[in-house]
Amino acid sequence: MSAEKIPGNTPQDGETVTERNLERLLSTAYRPEGPSEEFARQLRTAAQQHAAKRKEKSDMVESTVNVHASEGAGAGAGLGRIVGWSLAAAAALMAIVALILSHGRSEPKSAYRIPERASKAVPGTPLEFSGTPQAPAVVQAPHAPGTNYVPLRVPLPKPLFEGTPPALKGFNLAKPREPGEPFMVPDGCSNVALNKPVKSSDPEPTVGELKQVTDGDKEAVEGSFIELGPALQWVQIDLQGSFNIYAIMLWHFHKQARVYHAVVVQVADDPDFITNVRTVFNNDAGNSAGLGVGTDLEYLDEYTGKLIDAKGVKARYVRCYSKGNTSNDQNHYTEVEVHGIPAKGF
Amino acid sequence: MQTSFDRHWREQALAGDADAIRKLTDVALQDLYPFCLYRVGNRRELCEEVVQETVLRALDRLEEYDPQRADGDILRWLTGLARNEIHRVLAREQNTVSLEAMWARVDGELLEAYARLDKEALSRDVLRREETRQLVNATMSQLPPHYREALEHKYIRGTSVREMARMQSLSEKATESLLSRAREAFRAAFLTIARNLDAQT
Image (tube, rainbow over all chains, first blue to last red):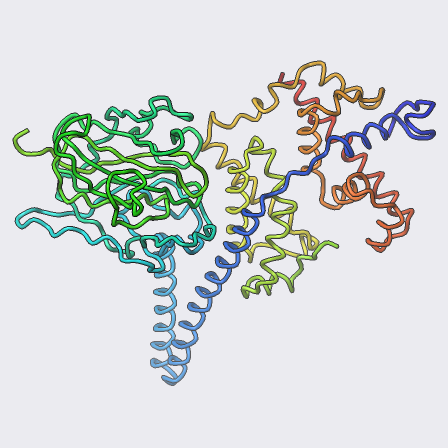
């Protein structure tokens, strides 16, 4: 280290300026920035589960090959042996193909387990949920006869919240839907809220702009969500026409494991919610919002969004209420989708 | 004491051994995390994404890790994987992560002060600046773990050379030598980063 020596007290005799500066930089300015304990815990759990799953798959392939190989050996010499080995090879190949196919699918996902890596999310696939049943899932309304129903296809955002959610004691959370169980909507149903005007009880959000609620961006990153003030707040979407609404999807803030309180969704024919107001979802069991006692269950906000069966209700305006969440008193909206078809006679 | 990620460890990890997996995540949290943090614009959420993806990818590709070639040091292999993840994340974020923007507040005067590291004592004001803290942290995150550990022992925890020598089963002379090399590595990295900032601003 080439440096001039400074006589006197600082730096001490024999110590170079460089050495003294380095010492001061390290002892004064250096503040190691490590990962949060929460992330550390999540990473450890995710890695352990991933390794276990990987081992399970590898054992499966191995046992398939072994079983069929031994069958092949027992078949004797000559043609029988060739057939046996061919079977073993085919079985192994099938197992590998099955693994590859299963790799591309979304794993059963639960609010109570670490999900698979984020990159496995397949946007645009039919909604699929699973989880540890804690309470009954929403049962879809019976289909109207003579109508062609198709699975609702909703492009999903990238999951960012991964890991075991904090203990949510006292919450009787709704379980997500079972895997492979699509939500059926009439053919021609689409997101009629996309880019439609939005107003709110808090016209100047602390974060973001109201139009972001219907801009189609559901990612759980900065710039994708809005933050409304504390206490009861609502956002309202003008569908600019009357629609038969079959599904409403909510994404509040799915970057962290949160439960939003007093979630109430109403539809109406007028912007002031005076005429023909109907409640399609209400989990405000304590009636803290003053909109009636809710019987729906609270839920964990996830990247898959909250699906509300609107049962074809006819309306022009949709209003979503909430009253803080398990992490803070604020209210957040990343996206609201309203899936419907134009009402007849409009 | 650093874990050796040797052939035995790899076999255990491939078998899904919980202890072996924990050792991998320990390295990821302790060494890989700081390495990635400053490469994704000091954004924790991106860093967490990169680290988690890297660990899962490493588990998927464990057969490719050659303990002999890596001399039991898995961090180099992990940082190689992490670079791809960082590249992917930065490409996705495009304009939202600007590494240059992170240093936008670094003014010329400060950079000049850094450049005079070998010539005059840094003022208290410079030492207390947030930019200095960031630069020191970024520099430390790029050092090999054994250098970083030695510097942290000496300057953060105040461990004596004698105690460090005992902990690492080295002679005091060898420990002094290690510290000297660590300081030189820090100095070189610090000045290089500061010079690059100077070129950008």
